[in-house]
Amino acid sequence: MMRAQIEAKLQAAFDPVFIDIIDESYRHNVPAGSESHFKVVLVSDKFSAERMLARHRQVYTVLAEELAGQVHALALHTYSASEWENLQDTVLPSPPCRGAGTLA
Image (cartoon, rainbow, N blue to C red):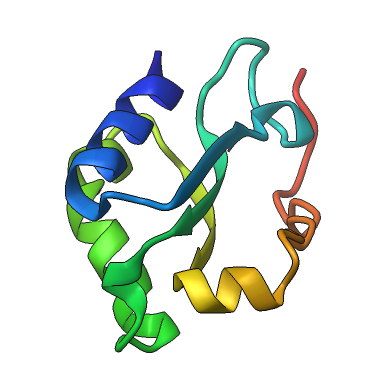
């Protein structure tokens, strides 16, 4: 559900050339079934004149409600169409979780 909500909001805001929302919650110290950690790969012409920080701020603004609630972390991969083409559709892996402790 959360994945679909994130995708719908990003589709509406960025009219992406490519979008992939990956639920990576299973890789983190969260209860089973949590939808709290996501990797977002977002390719949009709206990013052409923007630096990475500005792109990420735009995504955070669009997803402010989700980030204030259920979503704990986003691994953002934001590209212009030309950057994406130069990457040959390669997405870097997300970093390992730095959360401490284990679930009891």
